[in-house]
Image 1 (cartoon, rainbow, N blue to C red):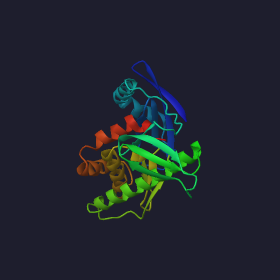
Image 2: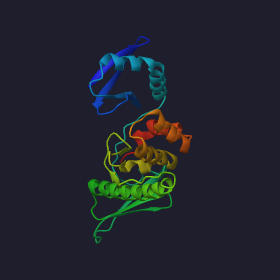
Image 3: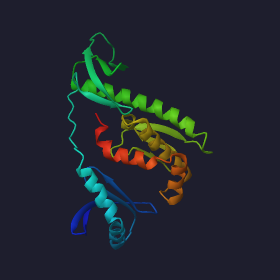
Image 4: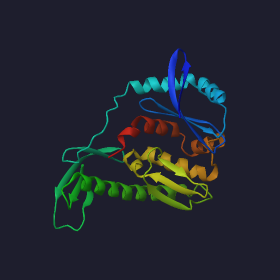
Length: 237
């Protein structure tokens, strides 16, 4: 639901998402997408009050985003394009082997190589996505193994999947779901996403106790959270 409010003579548009939650959360994604997640049946005036309280913070982020060049990524999946993996740029190299039973993807020096079975854009893209999913799961499993030493509880399951709007989520029964694209981010940012969801095993909301727990384990979490907001649009095929 699209809404707007005026702060310091500037009209600010935002989207409201109602859900079964106890607190309000404001998130800003570049270049100017503001999402407000609120409890069911929360009066609109309460939402406006909170947005007004955070007005300076909102304008600061919107102005910061204006200084960054956000160009849409339109890939052709051909030689010479660049792809991100663990925060580093790699050159894409594609070549065909029609005798192969299936396409394979691997890193060779500064290159991500796709040895394809069929020479078409869809096959190369699908092969890359499957490779990223596998790499994401391997990284996440290794990181969670380290975090499990800190927490008394363990996740019921760990799943890497397609998620359009989130880097990760934690279900009511402690299943951790991760966006496969997160493996394109720098390692510190990936670890923040993983830690964030591990902390939801202890605290299901985004209360002060939740953020205190995150900060106690990763004092620099705000920096990684901001990195994802600024660079998240680049983490895609």
